Image (tube, rainbow, N blue to C red):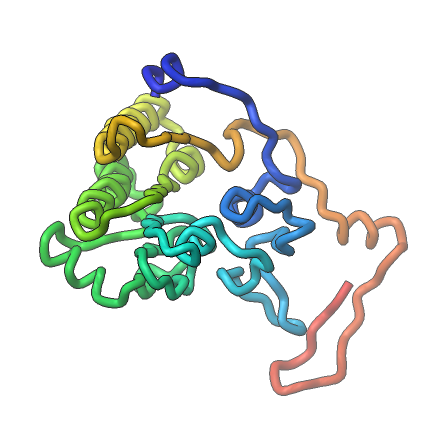
Length: 247
C-alpha cells in the first residue's frame, strides 16, 4: 500500500452520514449520498417487520451497472449490498457483506466453476474463533484474491473492483493487535497480487468506506424523543404476528 501511496496521490475523504458500511459502500458505488440513494441503516422496515437491506433498496444505479450498459465488462467481487447480484450482460458479480453465505453469483455457474479449481468460496469468517482467528480471516481474504484470478482468466475486463471486508470485521472480533496486523499484512499482499492483473496503464484506486477507531457514545433518536416526552409506544390491534409497539 505504501508504494502505491508514495507513487500516486493521497487524500483524506469524509465518509457518509451515518458512516456505516450499508450506507457508505452504496454511496461509493453510486456516487450519491444516503439522502439520494435512500439507505441509512443495516435494516429496512416493512410494516412492523424489519429485514437486512439489499440491492433493490438502493435507489440509484451502481457504477458497474452503468459500465455494463455501455457495452464494457465489469468484474465486481465482495462489495456489500450487491445482492441479489445484478443481471449484467457482460460482466460478473460476486456479492459480499449482508448477503447470505450461499448467495447466488452472476452468472449462476460461477460458484461451481470457481470451487472446482480453488475450493470453497466463503463470504464470512467464523467469528469468535480464537484458536485460528488469523487463519480464518486470511482464508476469507484469499478467496477475494483467488476469485479475482479466476475471473481475470475468464473475462477481458474493463473494470475490476474487489472489496476486502475483513479489514473492518477483524477490528470488531479481535483484540490482539499482533493478530490484526498479520491479517492486514496478508490483505496488503493480496491487493498487490490483484493490482498485478492490470496492465501498465491501468488506473488503480484504493478507497475505504470509513475509518476505524474507538468512540465514546451513540445517539438513538427514538430513545431521546421518548425520554423527553416527544413520542410514546403503543400497541397495535392484535394481528397474526401478535402485538407490537411503535415509537
